Image 1 (cartoon, one colour):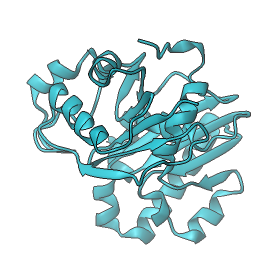
Image 2: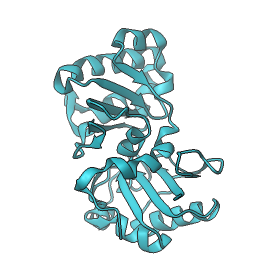
Image 3: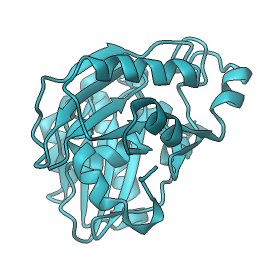
Length: 256
């Protein structure tokens, strides 16, 4: 059975492990800080170096922030900056990343079939039940999102860039800098307010809250969100690397 090298690329760190066909990790996850500035060539080299420290695998799954269509980067918010999230955008990096065939470059570099999706989509693949309308929100450097219909990943929407209040985007409104400014108690209340506001937009059957900061949501706020809201572990960003291959539907061909 195929083994999968799953790499979860975030704004602050890049994590990886190798999984068997059942989604069980064959190696302890490794993490390195995301280097900046980060042109595509350094991105590929960083992933290659990380993968070389893990057991051999048959295929590759990469989740990365931004709008990714058919393995091609339409836009990525963090990797076009000079020093990391919320630092100055470098026009040269914008040009390098726009239209970058990440799937093709990684498949060639690693010499194996590759699947490249938005990181929230890979995260969601590790937790969704596969029935009904399921929304995944990941809380970390910013806000990630992925929508699933009957277990199939729907076309990606960059919800994080939508305005939520005072011309502030969701990404800024609930991201890590704002959590640090507010403290966990007030930030948790803000997360609940965001959930309440999105409920009539999606009418989900289940909402999953994941990402590195989901564990910081206060229990009393989680309880007030309702039984259709579930907090899931951040390891789903790696574990989903196996199941993602079965959930992409016919909108994506992962073979080289």
